[in-house]
Image (cartoon, rainbow over all chains, first blue to last red; front, side):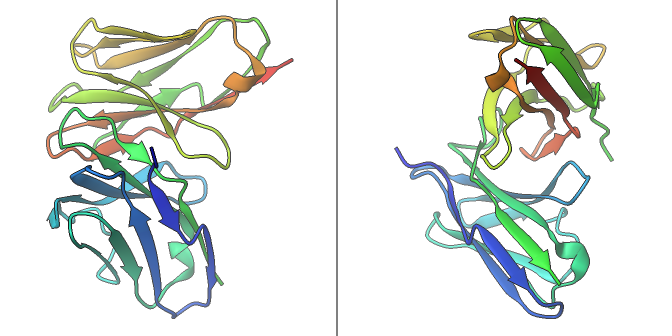
Length: 114
Length: 111
């Protein structure tokens, strides 16, 4: 079956522009997660969704970051007024449910802010 | 802030060698310990989800053990092959399902 997919795979943007990253989870997975890996850093939690609700947004690094999920499926992560420090690989994962479930990761979106 | 530490940071072994690396974590608020394998240009691949103290899991030549009381997990690879070359990540799951990752151990297996 299809795994988690993300688009675009690569994005180059200019500082100050807005970007939108998309994640299509595995069909039937109710939980969806966003992480990022900045250069030289470990994977960092950003936000998770249970259905369309985001109970924990504490990982979002600033108010320029927002995310939504619609129809219990596709999610978009939006970064407004991008900064160079936003350059990172953004990874999406999904799982059947919350707690003690394997999270299946997508291939990531590599974002470069010039 | 949770501190998940992995050691060593990198490791070079010869094909056929067996190897192991460590993940240490705070034992309070423990739900589960996840192990992932991440090859360059690919998605992180789930290896194990471990929940019980004393747990031991195995997948082919890879196995892992868990000690929740002292806060560590070991990952073992028996008879390493070049295709085992990857970064091995551990992640602590606490309540709420968010994973806190270590920085990984980068394994290179030389033919």
